[in-house]
Image (cartoon, rainbow, N blue to C red; front, side, top):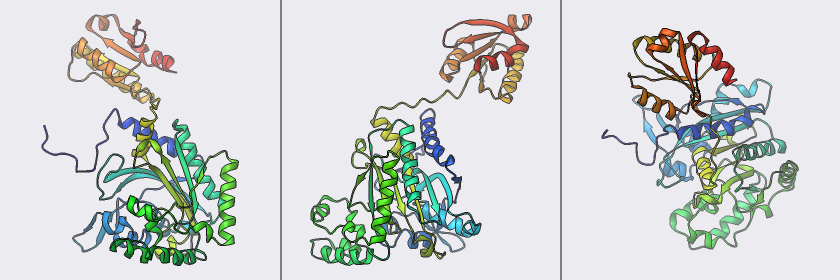
Amino acid sequence: MSTFKAPKGTYDLLPPDSAKFLAVREAIAAPLRNSGYGYIETPGFENVELFARGVGESTDIVTKEMYVFETKGGDRLALRPETTAPVLRAVLEANLHKAGNLPVKVWYSGSQYRYERPQKGRYRHFSQVGAEAIGAEDPALDAELIILADQSYRALGLRDFRILLNSLGDKECRPVYRAALQDFLRGLDLDEETLRRAEINPLRVLDDKRPEVQKQLTDAPLLRDYLCDACKAYHEEVRELITAAGVVFEDDPKLVRGLDYYTRTTFEFVHDGLGSQSAVGGGGRYDGLSEMIGGPALPSVGWALGVDRTVLALEAEGIELDIPSTTSVFAVPLGEEARRVLFAKVTELRKNGVAADFSYGGKGLKAAMKAANRSGARYALVLGERDLAEGVVQLKDMESGEQTAIGVNEIVAELESRLG
């Protein structure tokens, strides 16, 4: 028994459960690949300033949750708490935005790290699949991403999730709302830290989950009442496009996201079967982020969906994913010569695209067949000394129990035929 354990707030993905996580990632990624999004991967750590500027100095992520360290060379780095800012940094660094094909559409899959109080659905290490469309201001892009996320979840069989939608305005109308909200917040009975946050970014206070704060926000001014005509028209087109696509959503005038870079369209996917950690994903438009991190104006939109929470949502709805067995054929040799012959055949099967495994360690027939059963293989190949002498191998159908003797040299062709 090892004396080491996974760090607090983290988890290990182990078979067979890990197959469920892989299936969720694939289901989320599939519609993206089918819609012009190319895969992108960024380092697990970045310069601290990238997140301080992009995510926001006043956010809990930057002030409390980032894992920050200093390298031997004196660089201050942070494990990535989110991936939008790193993706935009990578696109700018590689000049993808100058290739003449905007928007740059990319998707990613990877781990994020936040120092939070661990609880079910909230971990210090967690996995997300995300998508970003960089360099175009178009309501159809916002709608496309919402539709693709909805499509991903429905492909998994999820039904009890809700899509919350709001607009956060832009640099023209948000300052007016910001001033009105600050005036309102100054009149509340809030602690010192929350009042300080209200002066830096008052919208962050609306995202405060504490009941004693939410109770006082009942009559807070709503951003929708301050939207300029351009933002109203933009938001209405997003709503019309996703409605026409058959996607059901709820208008939530109090919805804000926990990151400072969001503008205009903002949305969240929630699942009421998860308790307090009901958000399974979310995103929105971030037209000013490129300029925040030193790039040109590149209006963009994106989302991230939590793999961990999506798995919990599936469990809450009692959905069992149809995950095919990783092994189709399991070979059971009885004796050294049989071992040599069958191992060569397993290698040949694998080269021909048949998923095959082998009974290692010199197990007896009973133990080896138990292993074959546990593997989920459809067929078992059993080869003993008498079979060798006759030039045949016993092919057992693990579902029906039917057993047939076939020629050793017919193994690959017979199995390819049976497995299609």
